[in-house]
Image (spheres, rainbow, N blue to C red):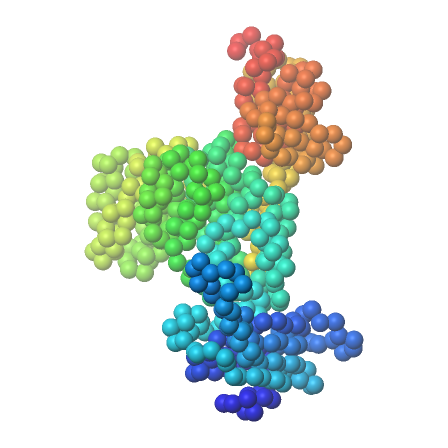
Length: 536
């Protein structure tokens, strides 16, 4: 196809245009890129605004494709002065496309296809990638390929937004959401991974400042599972720890396109890169039953044991028994519960013998192949050491419900990020604080007057709208009127109530709740021993 044949070539979508030039460039072994363009989304039409579907399909009102060698090459022999530099004039080959008068297509209006250099097949093979033009309609793929291998900072997100030409694949909205995240929390750590050579978001990993603080305070036991499919294309995964109040707390989020491989490896490696201190502090990681590559846990966290949520194992075994076995329902569940709750190796062996009497050989073979070999990961006797008094299944279930309730149905990636930011704020946790049990414990060891004062402050901590931030020396809390300062251990506060009484105030309780510290703590009374009863 020469210049006369290419001119007036018409395309009814940018995708069609990109596919054509993919084949055209590959046949001729030439490399063209978008040198300059005018996106339709940025055009200010005087009348008759274009329909959104037209903007989405065509993307540009005009653009110029130029030969990759448009800037030429510059060489200088070693030792020769600068004025003797040899410069080859850049290649002038180009193709111009403009929107048709009907505003429903792109048409080649100009082109000059003569190159002033010899085409190199090796260079072409190295640089040419199908879909390159299509990917670059939003952001340059060289940029997205590069940032996919590292954490991105706030200024890089702003830079990407300045480059962004269209809202293709929700990229611009996702960047705006991440920009909002950085604005609210400059200490956030973010990885934004794109599908290679395409401007399509593949994975988003982020850890807020509060998450990092919680992970450093409560690292021994972590939980990781798929939380929800928040739309047809993406799943939300999360790391959760248990704080001093036995509440599940988020440590990191992973938004991943369905079918993305090596999720656990990516998530663990990113977590350790975000908070290096935890590498040798984590003692147990409990995983969802569908999380693969469990062997990478000890590779990345050398002191950690791997466990599986017991309730998920029981549910899987129960469903499989229904499929493969003819045993009565009323017998299936008790037998499975017995083996899961085995407190000694002897009890486990006896439970196995009991199952042999009831279940079919095919089911028992499945059980021995799939679950007996990894019994250390889910049977109670081997889980006691690291799980302590926690019920991992209950904790993760309650936490999932909280997260799911806070997410919009069929949310975009950007909407999911914004929803998770709201869920991260401590206001809901403070409002839902059950202070009766904590107040009862203080009453049991304190004299009447200080116990009453503590109970009042505990109750007041529920009703304040607080902005709590970690500082170099501890924490600051603003209630919209005044700002108060607390130490790193969260036992002292600058407010007049604490200074005059040496008792825990509402600011300490609210800040301890946000940061996962126990609300009942004798350290809060160590400077006021007169508050304690004589019995203590």
